[in-house]
Length: 341
Image 1 (cartoon, rainbow, N blue to C red):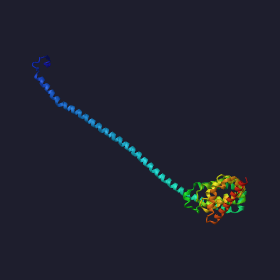
Image 2: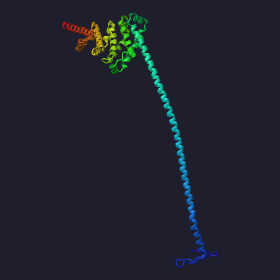
Image 3: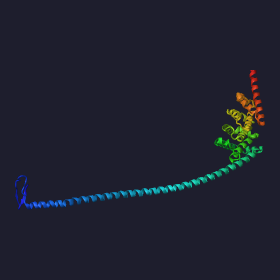
Image 4: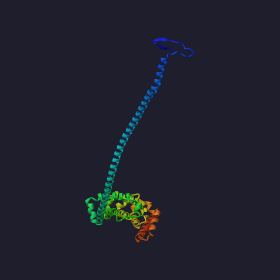
């Protein structure tokens, strides 16, 4: 190791691992080492503390920034929530208002429906009453407006029968309701029109849709349901059958005889009675007998008529006995013809 002394360079060889150093230089070196020992930790610790403070400040600032971001986000979400709640409350109020308006509209609609039903019932009841006079029906035919009424009547009857809950109605029929009275009045008017000669001729030639509708509806209605309506429709068909043209049209319908068979088991004696009368009307014409053929000779038909012949209702029992005699006479006549052949 080299040392400076008086500006001149001198060197000494180490002896035994020692070197020679001037005392002044050693003291200087010692002083410098002591100063380093004293000040270096302060410098290092100061920088470290400053760095720690900066790091802590940075962390604090970061947390504050995160908190501020979260606060802003919360404020934004709260604002959106308030807006949604306000909108929801507005929609609820509108919904309540609409519900109240709907309820009010339903009340008004029901009132209007009741009024129209009552008006229709009253008007058709007047028509039913007026149609009992032959001159009135003749006047209707002369005016040429009967066809439009019959078209509306067919639609009305079909709509009523197809929409009613038959299972419920069969238990509790409200004959006094405007709707029921309206339908009965429509059917009664048709029956009265068919009771007049000009009327039944018109129905036989120009109201085939109405006649088909009556037969279809009688097939749709379950046993024991609305017997009064069934009776009026059967009476209308019977009145039409008095006309040869009308009887031919009815008998050409393949469903007329099965319909009568089913109605003979309806359970209501008036329905059975008018079904028998319609059957009787068909047994009186040779052309119809030829058209229906062996269907009238079916043992099941005779058995159903025989059961009705034991009814406690005098008119039903009498009509059943007469019909049974007609069926037996038809069987005997057919047997005689076969024996001659």
